[in-house]
Image (cartoon, rainbow, N blue to C red; front, side, top):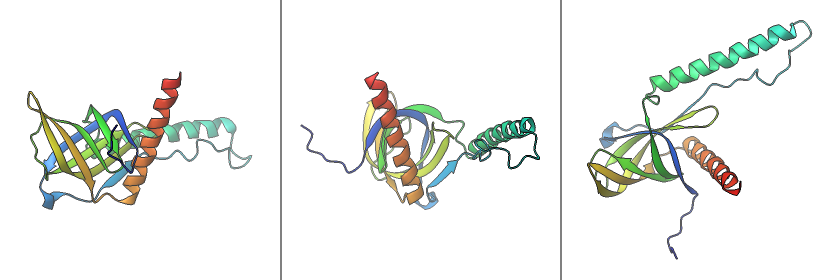
Length: 173
């Protein structure tokens, strides 16, 4: 029986992730890059003066523009060139494999692209707490998120709980 107790939910998942070692002086505050909302998507025409066909066309154009803007923002912030990796993640930290040698105490910059609707980019930093050499220049790294703000923590919790529900639902089928 595992006597270790954790105060948060943890899941195994696969999503786009980049990780690189940074110097402590260089890291910034964590940040969420969320997609653009499509506020018009579920609304009726505001009054009878707008043709319903035109209104539907405007809604479709708005949705397409939002997708383009979302992709451009994620590309500008460096989230598009990330590779899918298997991770074990919670609101307080994560474990994954890196090709860069790091040591306990190093600071790692993490860019995650969480597959939700809309896609959610998260930039955060973590302190390496454990490293295991798994051979071939690969290292399993466990880190604790450092200086993570409430918005980022809430988004991680929301994502983790949503993915956990999806996994349970899929397992039951």
